[in-house]
Each structure stands twice: as structure tokens, then as C-alpha cells.
Image 1 (cartoon, helix red, strand yellow):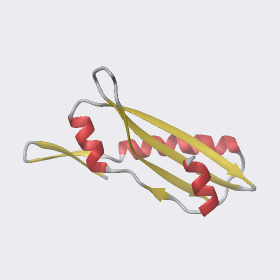
Image 2 (cartoon, rainbow, N blue to C red):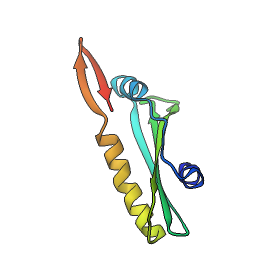
Image 3 (cartoon, rainbow, N blue to C red):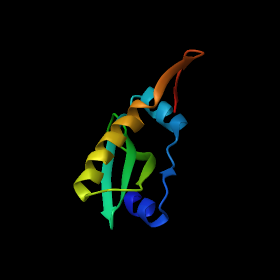
Length: 108
């Protein structure tokens, strides 16, 4: 879905909440990261959605947010998928823990 929005708008989107990310990780929630690539007529897009999953039953889920990247030039859907996987790694790795007043915080 994120890929379709990015392709139709021809611009990236950023709706990832680093504060919620930090709160969920600090509370012991697990992360699930989805990535997808899109391709149409030489244009590409990448989408990443980050979901937090509660560590105990009933294992509630919460969408922390999403990011999308527009690729001005793309040669194939495969290329868009590979770039999306790398983009997902960069998104999650780019949220770094920062300790402040005995609380764990993440900066983007």
C-alpha cells in the first residue's frame, strides 16, 4: 500500500513515530518489519511498515508507522524489491537508542 501511495504521488512519505518505537521497545514489545517494492513505467517505489507485537498473550499488534521512498529511475520490479529490503534495514538501523535520564529513547 505504501508503495502505491509513493508511486501515485511521486514523492516519499514518512509517518514513522520514533517516540512510539522507543516506548514499545522499552516495554519489551517485538518488532516486525515489512518491506515492498513497486515498479511502473520506469519509476519505482519502496515501502516499509514497522509493527510492534506485545510480548504476552493476546499478542496485540500496533503499527508504529511507515516510510516510503520514490525511485525516479528504476529498471525492474526486482530492483525495486531489492532496494526496498535495503531501505527497511536502513530505516530500522537508523533509529538509534539514546539514553537520557535512565530512559531509553530512540532518535531518527
